[in-house]
Length: 151
Image 1 (cartoon, rainbow, N blue to C red):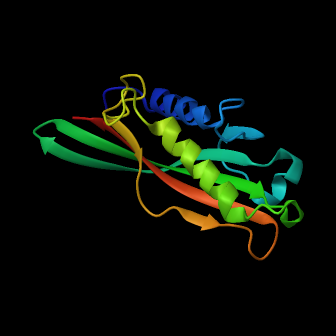
Image 2: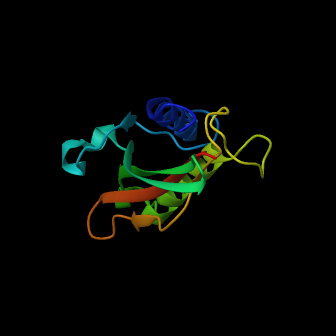
């Protein structure tokens, strides 16, 4: 691993917080934390809330002594959907996902997101699970994020 895991986790966390673009037209979170809480322990007033957790690592040796690390994170987002406002839960979920896409977009666009030069790339990959609050007012989004470092 080229850089310490904790530095990479902190850099990813900082980058994802850019989705909380208060006043910039992006989505505003009430809280954004590392570590996971159950949605029952997050009051509606503290939602939308985002939690970043690393849940696994994959290592592949590509050349003798040269290892590629892929760190798998999950961003869990809880939000309350209030049907009395006329806003559809899917609309709010879409706004959050758009903000996350923008937060992980590299500058300039269409290049790899290196988290300030710490990693080779960081991106959203896999199935994004979405519960738009159809059965109750509690909605949740689970976003898989990969970070490649090493070779």
